[in-house]
Amino acid sequence: MAETGTYLYAIAQDVGHPLPEEVAGVTGAPVRAITHEGLAAYVSPVPLEEFGEEPLRRFLEDLDWVGGTARAHDRVVEAVAKEAPTAPVRLVTVYSSEDQVRDLLRRRHDDLAEVLDHVTGCREWGVKAYAKPSEEAPRAEEAPEETDSPGTAYLKRRRASLRGREDAWRLAARRAEDIHATLAAVSVACHRHRPQDPRLSGREETMLLNGAYLVAEDRREEFVADVDALRGEEIEIQLTGPWAPYSFTSVDLGPTRAETLDAP
Image (tube, rainbow, N blue to C red; front, side, top):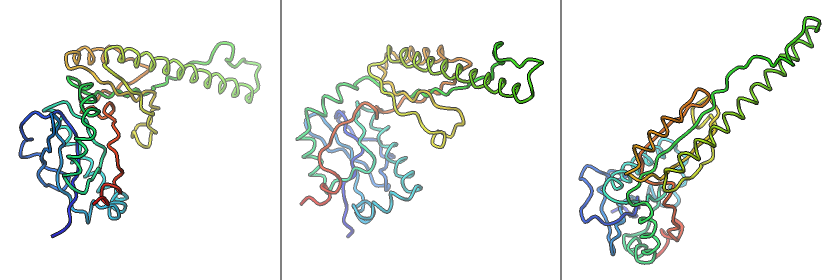
């Protein structure tokens, strides 16, 4: 029989009942909860021939494998988050046994409980703002004159165009700051991620804001309404969510993957 490890998806407040049967783990195996004093760690068995330290290095270079694993991981996390306050665990966190996960719940109980208390009654929303610079007419002081040579006239038009674009970018950047401040005011917590490169975002426009907002459920409609009110011609706003609070539940779970898999 092939050796197996224990894949950890999330830690949540224990609600006393299992996930729906149709929620399967990254390899299709059933997901179960390991509980300890009000906490529940959601896990499933995984083959170490695929999720062990050495083979995992190879699989992580396979984008199709990573994408499929990430989608399955997220499905479990979202299913858990619908049931209880949840702290998602980073992708491909594997322990050598369920006993190690139980030990984690014992050792880090107070820290984990504090994190879950912080996100109770909240969900994460993502807001991305993209600049849409408009072409502006040349400034009067830079407009070409009839006496200008063709080369001079070209340089003046070029200079005026660049200044117009710079002004548009500055205006868009200020709007992005205003958007973030407005949404932060109706959020429990917020975090600004690094703007994505167009190669990652899939958009030609420059991303000015890549924000995550932890929003109480009783302010959900207010938050969405504020996003809609902030939309404008110079900036396009993309709203996603609600999600499990990935950006607000960071906690050091202790040993690295290599240490957990090599532990006796």
